Image (cartoon, rainbow, N blue to C red; front, side, top):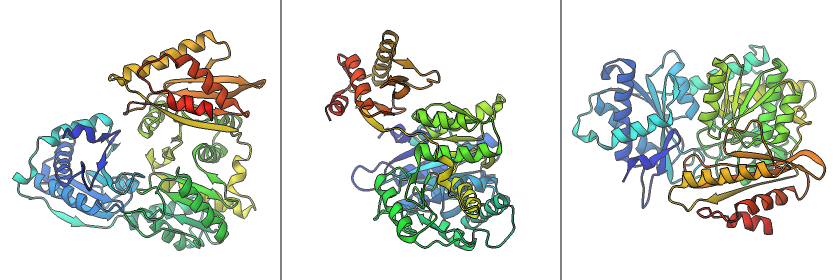
Length: 503
């Protein structure tokens, strides 16, 4: 097996049990050893001076992969801090927290993917490692034989989640300007942890005085028996909506398995994720500071851009991929453009005040502070985005590329689309086009009433096509216009596009 195939963006990820398992104990052991040597080399330390913290989500393979990773680190001669059940953001916060401060950390998680998947996510004091570093780790690890070494490092089991909970509690008190023991008294919040690692958040809210009746699926269960632990999943959101409405909660919150993504549901059952979630946190930040720039991925709506502008901010669309969005926000800040938020429509959100760490639980904590403030005023969080214009229609289609050189074929499709825009006056290339090709349309006499974005997937031979319209029938019109331009293109399966037009 080519271990480089395990790379998924800036993570290592794959099937971890059953036939065809790729994330094995052998892989985890070798990666643990390789990461220990990487940290020693980069930090200029002897290997016995390196400490690596390990954590896992609730997946059924988490314990054995954590144990194997620990074994590899110990055989390298480095030290292990075993946090056991934890969250991905907490694994980085441990590096910054006095009394812990390992030299690096590794989280065993596959985010929202099915129960038989798992992976490893690596952190250094600079944050999550980059895609290039993952490739280097995998290439180096594949040639190692850790079992030929005796374990000489030291192992310690410690709990970090209590400290992480204290940090979140302090953020709530600081946000509300109080040191009261129960600052959330009077607020009713239903928590859905999806049987992942985040069930402790309900305990935290209770300790701060919140009513958490209606909370569900708080117990870790790596088979995820109730719903997919994904804040974007319609069934998961529907389940939380029912919990909120049935319990009369002011707010519902939902996390993915490792809690780096989140979404919320209002008291009226309205889901607040994707563009709504971006608009909500943007509105909160813009109340404090005008003129800031909000960095998002490329598939955000035209209505969101208008919303941010109307509230006094700048909307900066960038490439898909939470690391891309975060890195661009950091770069802009270094250039003097103030960007306190980098956020993807998937729910990955990183705040400047939180070290630009993508932490769904921290984001929800900030939202709960605002929810408490607004309840005291007799208002709801949803009122902050009442003026967000949302599309009448939206569609996402994935076009598989069958050509062997899929990147070249994807670029050819994008070039053909750009050429079409040059010959059709009604096709307007978006001025902030930073990924693929985004085309805006005037529809039914309305200016800029629809758009589509055709781009190449970061890793796979696929071209995602997103399309939104503010008028009925606009999506079909735009899809048909695009199909006519790409119809003769070989090497891209256009049948999903043709099928969508026929619906």
